[in-house]
Amino acid sequence: MSRNKSRSGPRAPGALDVPPATRSGSAGWRDPRLWVGVVLVTGSVVAGARLLSTADDMTSVWAASSDLAAGQTITADDLRSTRLRFDDITDAQRYLGVDDELPAALTLTRPLAAGELVPAAALGEEVDDGSVDVSVAVAAEHVPTDLGRGSRVDVWVIGEDRGSRSEAELVLADVLVVDAPVVTESFASATTRQLVLAVPQDDEESLGVVLAASGDDRVRVVGRG
Image 1 (cartoon, rainbow, N blue to C red):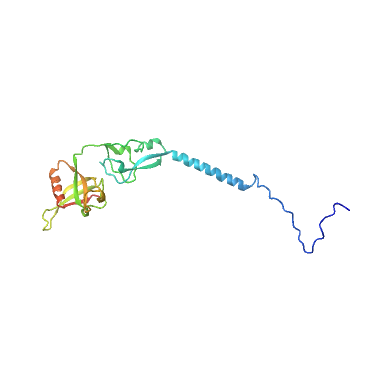
Image 2: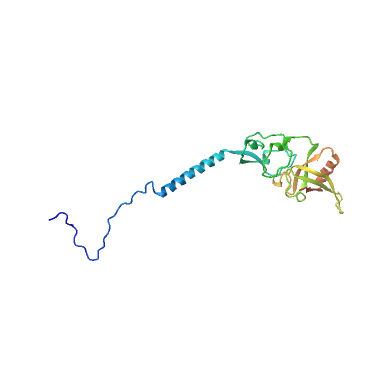
């Protein structure tokens, strides 16, 4: 008997030929999916490196936290830190850096808007402008709601005769508000606003009128915009 004779029995009627199972071959280095993955990983690494290098070039400088008026002394409460990338180091040196010591006796020589960087050229030595700081109590309803430190105001005084229609008199014009604590931070009552005004020291008459009227609730403060 021949050994090459098939050992399988007779095929059943209707049986199908089933191909033998084969193992899937390895994708190999020619598989385009492999190269797409390599490109994505490389791109992520390069992007991360660029982001880190850009962050190293950022410089922290001071910006105004609110609108600041000319002649106002700078304090830490008036500033907030912001990080920027300057193309030239000389550009960064034009502004007040966070790492620099904050001057204690320097004032603004020009106004700054909220968010504006603080230029070194906008700071100057504090000079005696011939004014004195005067604290005045004013009824809260007679003070503009948006009034704050650095605002400029006119101060009006109502006549003493409350029994008739009294005329208001402009006593102080275009004076600087040195400080204007909100009601919750003031020791005054909730119905009173305490203002610190820079009043010309040689105008003793107007100063006396304002102080006297402050005690009688006859002071009216008007913002100059």
